[in-house]
Length: 355
Image 1 (tube, rainbow, N blue to C red):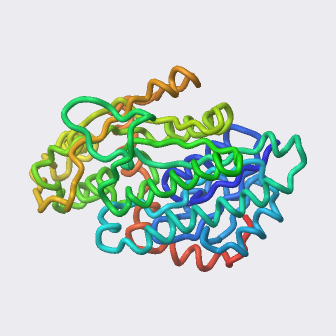
Image 2 (cartoon, rainbow, N blue to C red; image 1 turned 180 degrees about the horizontal axis):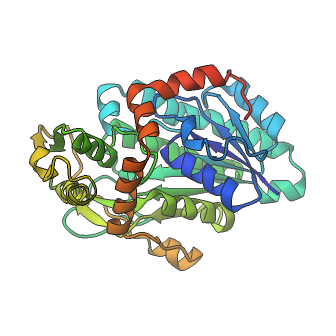
């Protein structure tokens, strides 16, 4: 039985990873999360009472607290998902992205490297630091082609620039210190428990409530969509079998324009939530985001060839599951949209919590 330290484990992707580890393996999981606005422990209610799960409310920029966590929990691996991740927020307030995504990653790397150097030969050889990043570090594609692992970085937003910086730090720690790392870069995730500032949950909840469905520009920006549980499976596989020092791109082979995504959600809601149909009458076009990348698309052949991973969900099946989940989990939705989940955290956890 291994102990896995998951940073950002109360976030969207992190909570999916934690739930899978607890439900599908015998590993212990330490969820380390600062609990910013996007961190929601209610997303982990189904596993929070499991004796193999622990929670630590810690900022990855806090070297003293990180040292304590490594000392007390003695993890065998780190999965680093803690990050500021919303492009719009990075444009209006880049400082938090620089602090968390760059300084925080550096601080975590040093804490993990110090811990790694204390391990015996067997545990040291088995230790892994898995850095989870984004396809946005590669910049924007034209009408053809795909992001591959050997492409140069060309980040175009403060968010993607901060993630590119963290990727380079992780690579440098491997090549300079021999620190055992693997890196993954993923396409746009979607699925249950997604904070409703992102496109798909925002559109679902706005449509259900008869509010406008905002689309940037003409809605012709293209993204490759990846169901979050498929991504979590891929991350666990890379942690277990990925080659040290390598990068693996994870994508869903689901290229859609933003307008196609919104139209698809409206069609599903017309069937499952006919009140207010047709929902596409709510579509509203808004001023485009500054520096908006036109197209992202990942070539996921390497992880398929080397590790045997492929997504189980196509976009149609995953999107239907996502819409059904939001329609069936009104209490979670109300807790997030009202901010009640933050009050719940304050009343149930202290700065050094265990669950």
